[in-house]
Length: 333
Image 1 (cartoon, rainbow, N blue to C red):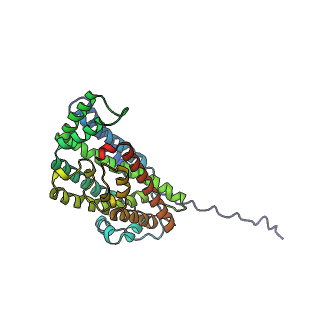
Image 2: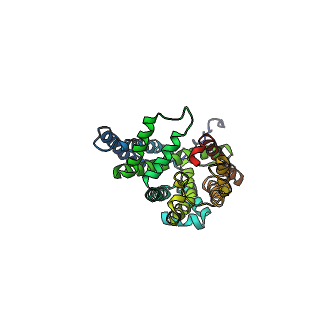
Image 3: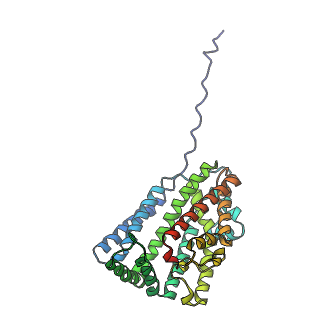
């Protein structure tokens, strides 16, 4: 009779877990962007092109580094994947069926389309705002407010006049205006990527599971309807209202007023104005979109967790803006 131990067969090793893919194609964009940024920075440093675009060159180089680093961040692996929606379907669907769009982003977290639309609308509104109010009025208002700042924030008189001259040239020089567009392009992505990391961390703390790329796509698509409404309606109001009735700083984002900020004077009660401005139709619409996006764009994210994260960061941003208003009330007068 054979020993049962001799017939023992060890269990087969468990199958290796599927390794999450990386967005390696991002590196083919990162390297040219980085090189282009260095070239622009070097030409500006050598004064071949206006030195004012040096920041744009540095921004492009930084964006290239960010893209390269993010190319190592794993993409989500979702079982039972549905068919991907086209960019046009998602751009239109975010207005009419956002839950379906966010569910599709769970598997296919593609973010380029809303990123481009948001950046283009921001640049168009900014250019129209500058043309309508004139560079001189915008820069003079901003520099005068800087000169009124209390010590130790007040720059010396020579620096103030330099800021005035440089600011007007920046808004008038075509090459420097292109640099401003590039800077906006970089800023939109970097700010959203940083916010995505925070939202992802917050979701994990609340017990949910969500990937960085899912969070990035959710935030960009959740912001898209708000940006479209603010910029498009803002463009209409920009040419309806008299330029003298438009605030050179507060109007730079939008002229749409759908909140309780109308109850307070920004000059007399800057903090109350900021707090009341956060209570409005678009503010709550954006909050609902973020919560819906986190719930449907992540894995096992409860409704309470999604709303908890969305409200938490809404409250934090409100505190930051209120603090800025309290520190620098003159910019709102």
